[in-house]
Image (tube, rainbow, N blue to C red; front, side, top):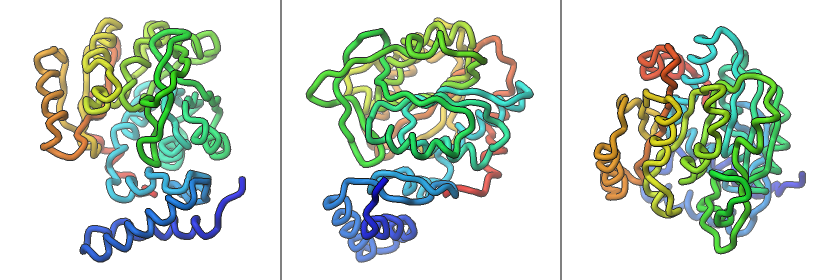
Length: 321
């Protein structure tokens, strides 16, 4: 895949210097000008390293910047994979909905290399999907799919639009077809599904509503983004995630902040309480773009929820970039 050497150099220099942006206004201005110059003039692929792996990403791809600025924000996922692996006493298989270029999978493979058996990667954005298929050479056994997931087969959502250089959301002007996760994978699965990770910018509840067969049969641990600001922008329900999961036997919810810090347990997720969190997020005063990552656990699991909340393993990991 052909890349631009000039913009590749700029991108990687920006990565090395991003942590200095906040030191003073001049550094921030120079950094921002360089970033805008490069991303406005070149939209194609560049080569960089993510968690030690040489990969292809789109120019300006934001994940490596976040990983440097907020090194703990994927801690809940790291700890969940490690804890489930230890609890089951075997390698785990999981479904990654919203894989982008494969960045968080690379984080897991780098730091928990003996825990993963198979990954099902699903990405709706074609550009990200093309890079994912290059970068997956580092993955264990895997399957990749370029589809948009919804709560029903042959449904419709708005087309994907990149809201920034690291993610795409269904807020476009045109309509696009969707398929349910059950329809896509249920008949193809040949092993247990232990974890489902969902990060699809406001459509997490829709995806969950489309995988009742998988949830009922495998009772996987679920980690999803709960983002009221994006839920409002995409006209999706604030409560659908919790109603559906509770209906399928999930009775423990571990809440983490957008920075990957444990926030609290919630075993009921009542509408009244959720409405309070919705209001906090939508006011957008507590912290910019405030939202949560949530781990849902089925009632039949006896996994140690305190171990997950304490994130001892995740906090001990050194390799970040």
